[in-house]
Length: 401
Image (cartoon, rainbow, N blue to C red; front, side, top):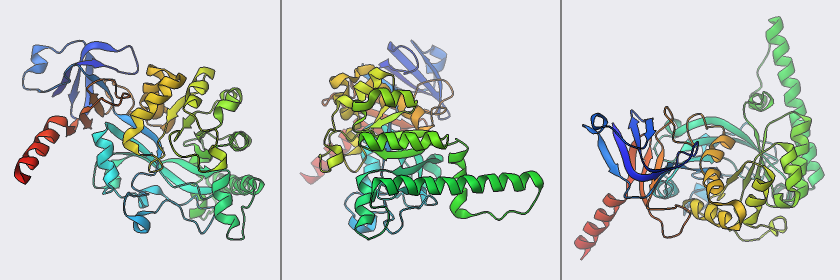
């Protein structure tokens, strides 16, 4: 048994408990309450939150952690297969390196889960996966794979392929190529289902099988879209093929908030702190998340790591809170709402009995710059302890001295 106590507990599925405790057993949350019994405390390991905030582990809903490694240059950059604009059969899990130092930074920041996948150079980039942020084996870190199919609209595919003298060179060709691929995939699915029903022979196509979870609405299209026209094109195509969709970046979403709300699709907003180095991000603003949420859109916040650094996700959520999102909605955007958008809310995102004990304990509000991470737990295991970190730093300093 492990107990976290003496802190303000934010279950995110109900009101905060001002001085509560969280009981953990065998990697799962057993109970969240106002107190622990003497019997429960007997023999349990107790973590003192010191009056801080106890939250579900922070979740990054869109990033390239471990697939665009820090400091390794070309050898660590496996984010974009820039030789073919249609590559749905590529899998992020084959390129994510858990040894990327950014995983350690994530754990230190209380970030316990991340949606990771290909970049946006291709019209169809491949399959995203949702991973926990600690481990040496991707297969053991995976929570959901595939978790989404990456597609991209706008400047990035245009820039990459127009320079090569081939499609897509326009937004029309991006949309047309995606429709063509989806139409072929839908025909493949119909043929496969007919063969299964009749008992006839059917030869599987590796390059089409990857579309079946999308067409069956098991996972969403994950659409890179900044500009209003690109956002609306993504919505239009998703409706045409009756698909699930997440609007990633959604930079100009605040300009068409009503249309985004009417689509029913969620938005993953950001990175709002990055440079406006492209025409399509000229209206990037931290107010976007709040305006969309006011309209009724489910919103998550993204760093798009390494475009902006993953470990500062709670701070970016805090700026969005200041700019209209509000404190509780901003916390939801990096916990329970992010988990729901990523399709992992059956295990993560809230402090509820039976869910994974992925928990972050902070000295106060994690969205404030002076707040420290006290503990990070994944699967009930304490992976970061601020006291051990400080003791190690002190001992190292004494040795060096």
